[in-house]
Length: 190
Image (cartoon, rainbow, N blue to C red):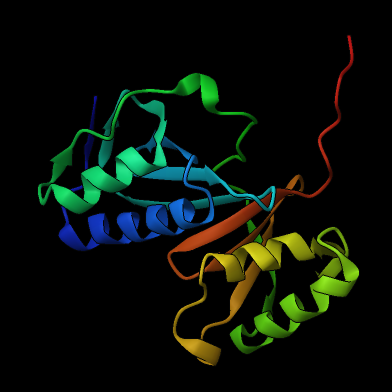
């Protein structure tokens, strides 16, 4: 098993996202998926939203789940274009992922408004609508996840963009994003 990301800056950016995931949940898992000449990284958060980022590179196998702490150690300790991301724990991944295409930007929220939205969340709860654009309601948990990850960096000059693909919503905060189903998944009882 291997993860190859040629550019040191891209490896550092991946390590930064994984470190933030581990800070929120030390037992988190990360799913790595090949997408052409890019590696997409996905991780669940305690806020019931996904975090994602991508970098030019490749991963073998093309779809594998590893412990976030193992991947962080590999990216932080080994200064090489290719690392061993850790042992596969594919059985620990729960849920599906959105398609990689079809996202339409439908709104933005200024970075300096994120803290105000998070402050209102305490009284309203994580499932309350924190923001709405073009008929898409963004639950507070999505904005709290953006803040919990420490994004966006760069202050008020960096807006957080809201995108929609019909089934999922995405809050883009620079090189990474928070993603959530627009509607809760149905549970099938048998």
